[in-house]
Length: 119
Image (cartoon, rainbow, N blue to C red; front, side, top):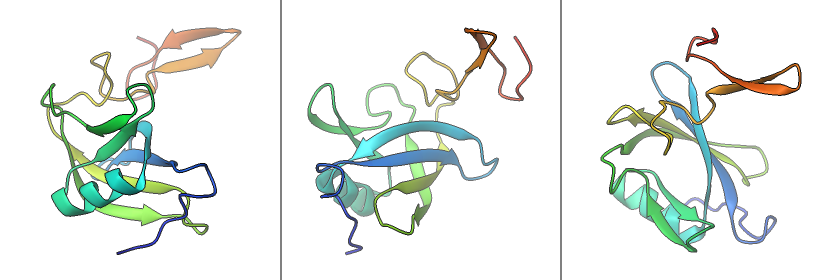
């Protein structure tokens, strides 16, 4: 199995989910050794929920699964990018396609469309 450096960050490392087709960044979550192994085994993004302290298969209850197409590992082996096919449309628990649907500007947050224009 591919060895990642989970010790450096206290047992969890960042995992960025990115649309494999468009390159759009969908979300950031964390993985543990167990969720990493499950992602590799199943082919679907499985994260570690810091709030619930358990494994979390993205979309298991909502149907918004993330089928992993490719995995990129950074130079220090302590961050990964899951290049995914986002099934069901929404990666964000708010129902947005991406968790990054707001822009900081002039001291406020404003909602933007995926293309970056104000909504």
